[in-house]
Length: 288
Image (cartoon, rainbow, N blue to C red; front, side):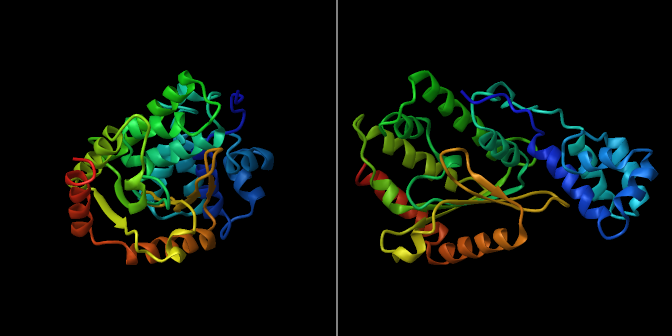
């Protein structure tokens, strides 16, 4: 079983990293610590996310640093007040990997999300039956209870698309071969999944493109990737899927490369209207 996390959450680390970016060009760490009445160790631990910083201290530190973007300072102060491990996912700490928890917390704050997966329907648009089939029919050693827990988490994550306040914008590239999956439990799974995809195409915050069966292999062998963008001033995050919950990066060069890859695949995917039409053809044909 995964151990309870002893380190800071991803957002505490991001708060510290943003403060460090603001401080770096204008003030040495010792001078900034003195201005706050701290020692250098305390400041270092704030900037690495080991220590929590209050919203008031964010405002005070940024005033010392001369940060003149008040909207950005207010946003960092808001996030600094987030409770450690808060959110609907808190009960799952210690039951799933820290990397997966990090991704859930990032996803929950994202303003826009771009996803390409070369093999399966991307997670934000998966139906419960589809997730259950993937988790329980692949020869894994998951118990039924754990599989159902993971299904529940996957479904809860999709709230980002329908929440009342600032629903996330989603641009998803769906591999057409995934629509040909067959399951022992019958065709109902894929019929329900395709209906969910069609419903998603009617959502104003969702852009869905099918990557066609005829796509050159060069476009569909790059591996799954997710790009997360956030409100100002947070830097974007790129994530590569893996069994442990993903590998996430804020490094500009890596994120830029992933953005270029996504745009390249998007350029050869079917347009939105044509994608919707083909989904309807599948529903009326293969899965009628």
